[in-house]
Amino acid sequence: MIGIQAGAVSFVDEGTERVLDNLQRLASVNTLFLATFTYGRGIGGRQPRGSALPDHGKQEYDDTFHGGQFATPHRQYYRNTSILPEKAPDHGDYDVLADVLPAARKRGMKVICWFEDVIGANVPGFDAAREVTLVGRPSTFACSRNPSTRNFWLGMVEDYLRSYDVDGLMWGSERQGPLGNAIVANHGGLGAGGGVACFCQYCIAAAKQQGIDVERAKTGYLELYTWCNAMRANGARPPVDGAFVTFWRLLTKYPEIMAWERLWNEALNDTYRDMYAKAKEIAPRKGIGWHVWHNNSFSPFYRAEQDYADFGKYSDFLKVVIYNLCGGERLAQYVRSVQRTVFADFTPAQVLDFTYGVQQYRDKPLEQLAAEGLGPDYVLRETKRAVASAGSNTKIWPGIDVDIPTAATSKKTTPDDVYLAVKAAFEGGANGVLLSRKYSEMRLANLGGAGRALRELKLG
Image (cartoon, rainbow, N blue to C red; front, side, top):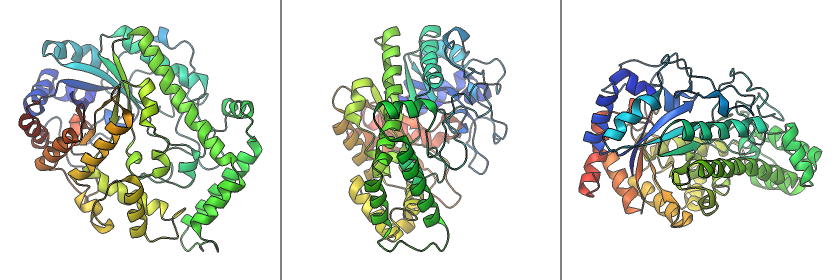
């Protein structure tokens, strides 16, 4: 499987045949992962302002991106949800599946719908499904346990599989539970993975059914959140017993913290299971799998909750994010974030050394990470780990970084970088690769680096 992620904007800007010509000629792409639903520019728009412009498509930034459904939503499949399946207004009536599917079929290319757990805050009906945060700003995510949310995703599964002759589905949820969000154990900073949530009526009812003391859970999370905020404040005094001991003390004092974390993850995993079951009910032979967030490479707290062996019971494939080039910048951000909360007893360099140890790979020192990125050995090791963890029934398709935007002084992609990463993925036992984040931000020479590796491997 040689795949690439692409949004509707590329086919509108450049023309469908020209895009497909480039993908097949430069990188031997045989599978298109089309961004069919998103409110995030990351997979649906052009480049964010400040990033490098590619050498194809329109030479401009996308300041007016709205998002929504880039295919045509069929309302009969969304009867049991409050969330409106809104047609993206970005390209008028353009339907990316209706346009690209016939052209791809003529070339022998497969098409997979790629949609993600990001819903616009102003979408009608979203507020009825929104997570309820304990403290802090309102959540930007819908609660996975809320029936409106679950039925929205199930409606989308049914819509794509019944309305279009696609080859499969990939869904992504770049979120973590309330524990990781309270201690800010991610590379995106406050709010990147969600808030201290969810405490809606459905989550509270599920907690009571499991015998979890709701008020103690709230009290525990409030103490943890308050303490972490104080630690992150400039000039905060470290606790007398140290940061990690204080963190662990809160977990032992309030075991309800971990119980609520598990409750949150159960809801998300149930969503995966339900989507898988619905897809197999409609189209048993078509694949469905999941995009696994990059935080999996950084946070051991998050990684512990991503059990690939368990995923294998309800996944045909996993696209594991192994973006090595932007990974240096992101790993440095993660290290500096958790060093301000639970790992404040250590220097940032010591936190990085600890992270390398528990995450089972080792790369550059902290001061070089952003500027140089992570090397191909990171791709090799993470691919090997994913293949070993998932078992033989679940395909592993590593996500390969091609021109993912980074800060001005951070690592930029070269053709050799992509060449080495693709070779490392296959050396690690991958069943394919998925060139990421999206075609519209890639430079053609860098895409050609993937093609060079595939030709050497006799795969392209």
